[in-house]
Image (cartoon, rainbow, N blue to C red):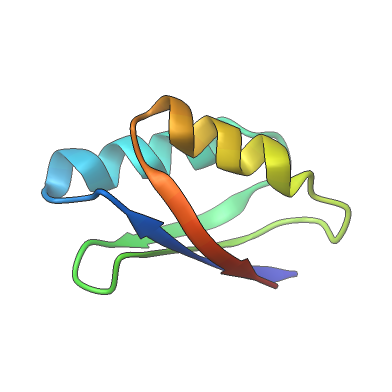
Length: 70
């Protein structure tokens, strides 16, 4: 399943790498793409993905998930 998250707080390529790394560290998440320009992260994951875990991982890097949709 494809997911798209709107992320607040990214301002540079370091931010992009931090968000991408946080997502890649979660089992089941693949094909991660993070766009600073669009302030979005896109990835593939199983339908039963724990979105709260995803939000927490991004929050721990210092960013906020504003919205997400499969």
